[in-house]
Each structure stands twice: as structure tokens, then as C-alpha cells.
Length: 301
Image (cartoon, rainbow, N blue to C red; front, side):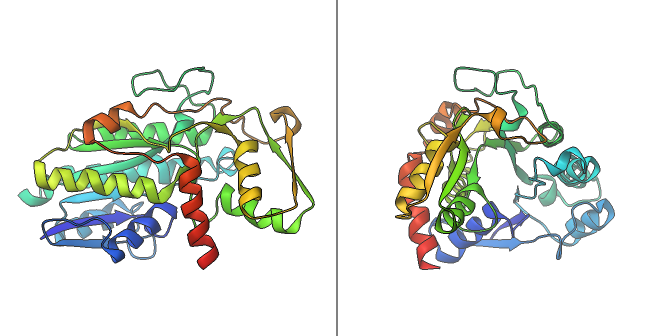
């Protein structure tokens, strides 16, 4: 029996992992027991409770999907952002290092999710894992600290992703879909470039890594990047969403300077995925193909 703990299970990525596990989309050769937790069932900010939780239960893998993702609010709610994005990660890795834990627990493999916001967005070529980080926000800085805590554990993988969306939770794709049914026009920035990531595709990739680790003992620690294939602006993304929704809403392109926000967004946050594709032989769909899949789920709900 392989035991997998998923924290932050009520968020976009955690919900997609649960959907995949419920539908048995990834077929494992061994029996898998998923344990899905969120703050109501496991408060990972409470280090003592976390230590006790791990003493009572043994896990082969932990997938940490818990995150503080409100980029603007993080600027004034700095303590909460660092608590969730950094301290909670440290609590998990500290618990795994606890000498009182069993031998089985000490071998737990840890997968943690991070963000493109650890970069400053000034590049003009896709970011690789070895390019220097330079976060421009509390959110980005807190996530970078979380990466460092995760990688202090010698059995950790950190996966950076960008522009995450899903049929679950709050995200850009769902917001635009809703607004373009209600508004005659929307203004969306065209000078911020990146790649949307369908949380379902990221969840599939994570479970493929777990499957390879179980079957082939192929768990190569370190940093990885994952997003869907292709590149677009937020304007392009919104325009395609409106078109697929058969909306008459007009999407107007505007510059970032005309859309005031507490935090400067990266102008360029395209991630290079060569490392994760070559290491784990992962096939990544184009973002427009994944958006089609998103719409099928959205319209059936």
C-alpha cells in the first residue's frame, strides 16, 4: 500500500488531484491510499499538531498544494502570506526530519508547488530552473522562501507553475467567463506575456512523477518548471475565453500602466519545461487544447 498525503486539498490543484484519484485516471501498479486534507482537517501552520499527525500516520509521498495566492492582498497581509507559503513548508520538512518518526516516515518524498513570481519578469527568453530569481512582491518572496525550505529536505521536488486555472475555485479563466456573460466590454492587459496552466494537466504530471517513482524508483529531486505549451498575453487568453463562450462581450487590450494594481505583475513569465519533459517523459498539451477541456467540465457543472 502506497500512502499519499495531499495538503491544501480544497484548492484548484488539490481538487484536480482528488478528481483524478476518484476517477482512477492514473493507473498505479500498487494499491494507492490518498489522504486529502485542508486547514479544517490538518493545520500545517501548527508545527506541534503536524508532528503528532506524522507520528500517528506514515506517508510515502506528500504533495503540498496549500498556498496563499492573493498577490495584491499579500502586500498588506505579509504575515499570513509568509506563514502559508514559507513557514508551513518548513513545518512539513521539519516534521519529516524529526528523529522520533519511523524509518518509513523518514523516507517520505515531498512535492511542493511554487510560482513564476519568483522571477522579476524582465527576461525575453523562457525561464529555466537555473536562471536567477528576483521576486518583486511579497507573494513571490514568500514562495521563494518556501522553495528553499522544501529543498532543504533531501527528498524534495519543487515544481514552479504559472497562470493556474481550473473549474474549481477562483481564477482568471472562470472570472472572465462569468464577466463576459454580464458585461458589454472588458479591459485586459496585453503587455504581460506567459502561459496558462490547466491545473488538471499539472495534477496529471505530478501523479505521473509519483507513478514513475513507485515503478522505476525515478524520483529526481530539485527544481522543475511546468505550464501548458504555447505563449499568450492575458488579453489573448481572455479573448479566446470570450470566443469559446460565444459571448458578444468586447475584450479591449490595454497596457499595464492603465490597470492600477498594488503589485507589479511580471511582464514576461514564460517557463522552460524541457527539464521536466525529459526527466519524466511528460507530454504537455497546448494551452488552447486544455482550455477546450476546461470548458467541457465548466459547461457540464
